[in-house]
Amino acid sequence: MTTTPIHYRHILFDWGDTLMRDLPGQIGPMANWPKVEAMPGAVQALQVLSKHYVCHLATNAKDSDAAEIRRALARVGLDTHLSEIFCFKQLQVEKPASAYFQQIVKKLNCSPEQILMVGDNLQKDIIGALEAGLDACWLNLDDAGNKQDIQQVNSFSSLTSWLLSKG
Image (tube, rainbow, N blue to C red; front, top):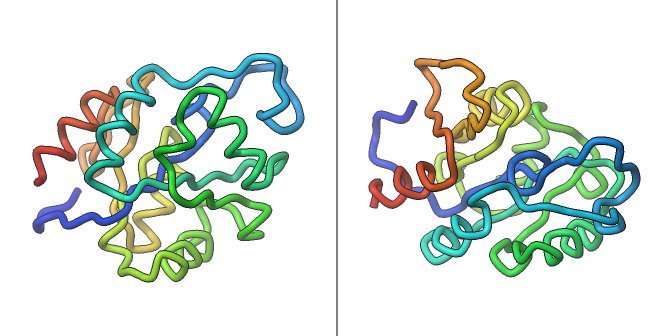
């Protein structure tokens, strides 16, 4: 958990089960799925947070390239709130590898401390980002336990309130 003042410029959001529900039984690019869903509160949170931070998507999804991901996001109204799409097909490495996050830091041309990673997967999204020098917030929607040393929230409204309280 951060103890120094927070000066985030960028927020990275995971995709599957963070911004959009990863529906069971679906295969291929999400943009082509018959049904897609935003996670509860995701659209409203990004509407607010994108006014204060540059928001991006960072995913390990292998079936979709950045254009296909953006088409899926558009189906639920999330595309206009996200600047860059960082995906496996672009980076050729997966979270939690430090190289994944280092490439993003380089492309955003900022220090790791200026980036917050938000995701639902403790190991891939959160631990991976922390080990790469980024800050992270676990979006623990399922209340899957408590990690005292890791910033966590249980809803997008809690995430928004926490970030906006940091000024």
